[in-house]
Length: 252
Image 1: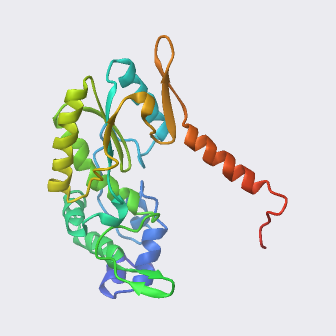
Image 2 (image 1 turned 90 degrees about the horizontal axis):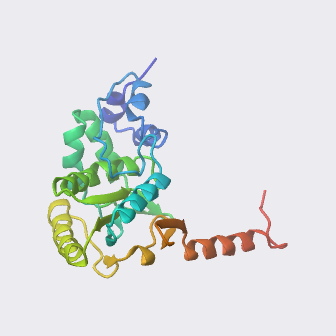
């Protein structure tokens, strides 16, 4: 007997709902629900500047695109920091965007149950009235639904940018233009998406001072190039040294 998602939702079998969500691939949500005899029509329009958690896209491609912009003269960068993005996503605002791409009430109800399920912190139940579970299989998909609105806004302004999940950089040709964009986009994000931009960490920077997706940037005589950032290399060395200690062991 194949039970549909309707059965799980109507009977409030939260354990079953949790299994459906966590066993799914965020790129193939439809396929997961079809397994239960229930088909969901879903799709998020892919934007050229978006690389995180997209089929056939990866962070290296975002770095290559960024280098193209630098070498075309777009060397003033607006580095936007969304403060604790996964913890601070307003769920009602998120669900309004989910409803635009998932035209199915049962699926929307399933996702809302997932968001409202709560967490166990040191054995104590805590409600989750805001945010999405960081590290959960569904969270990357929901973040792309939310920030797809930012992609559309940036494209409507004809701005060049790359985004990997909640890591967003916008590139411009002058510092004055970068300053204007930083303030206007910050205002738009907070007003339209209900997200908080970290004013301390959001900044305007040249490529040589940018750390993005673990990479730093430098220029030889002719062009900009990328390499692992010094802090990323140091972190890797510390981790490797820790793992190579003679006293290190794994409990079986």
